[in-house]
Amino acid sequence: MFRTIFQRTTPVIRSQASRWSLKQIAPSPRRHYTSGKPAGSPSIPAMLAVASMGFAAYYTLVKSREGQPLPRRQQSNQPESSKAPQTQVSTENELPVPAFTTDQVTVVFVLGGPGAGKGTQCDRLKKDYDFVHLSAGDLLREEQNREGSKYGELIKHYIKEGLIVPMEVTIALLEQAMRESMEKDNKHRFLIDGFPRKMDQALKFEEAVVPSKMVLYFECPEQVMLERLLKRGESSGRSDDNIDSIKKRFRVFKETSFPVIEAFEKENKVKTVSCVKPVDEVYQEVRVVFDKMFEK
View 1 (tube, rainbow, N blue to C red):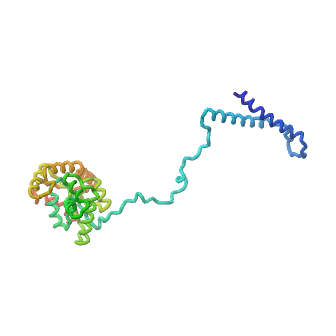
View 2: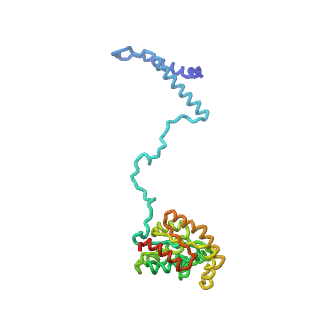
View 3: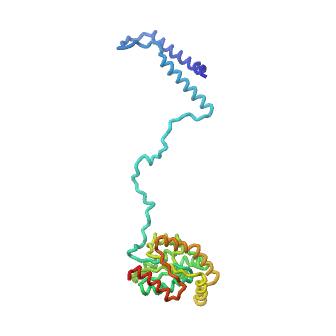
């Protein structure tokens, strides 16, 4: 291979040599040098430089014919945006501001299975502690029956099937009811009964409306709740007070609502009261919880 390279570069060397010899023949003004003598013939370094150029050209030609990529200068992969300091502050991750602060309102979530007695205990609490009792279920039923409601049919279907109504609807109704009570009656304490029924509802409410102060959980066995609901169904006229809907509601509570209680327990916000005892005894235990909260 080196013989071939030498043969390819020899004509170049000879051509350069002939140019230098012609320069010697042609007359030129005499120059004087301070050191050394003028170069009259090509030097060995010059010949090696020419040979290396020829080898490089040959190498490039062979690689291109073989289809191999030619060596290129590496370029920086650093994006342009990272070369200059960021001057703009992103606002996409900013948290939304709740409608109310915890100084303006006090919210207690009242949770428990269907028929645990939440409504009965809330009726007493609103009298003794100046609370407004907001039942998520009652608000949904009122909206369902309200003339011209765009959510009426949707709410009716979800309640009948024992399913959870989309949280956007429920949260909007709760916030509206709270605002009306504050403006009309100057009320600032709210018991929210039967809500949140899913963790995403809890997070969305506390993000959009106000963080809760406490979670009051009424604990009750399913068999006791079933007997209460069937008894209530004899006179309530509610479409979901039947055996099929009740069983669906039990299942939904166990699968989706109870994890909410477990999550709030990790924040030490849950107060549990057993509802197996008579109503008056249950309320005495409830009062202990609220007296401590308000330090009465």
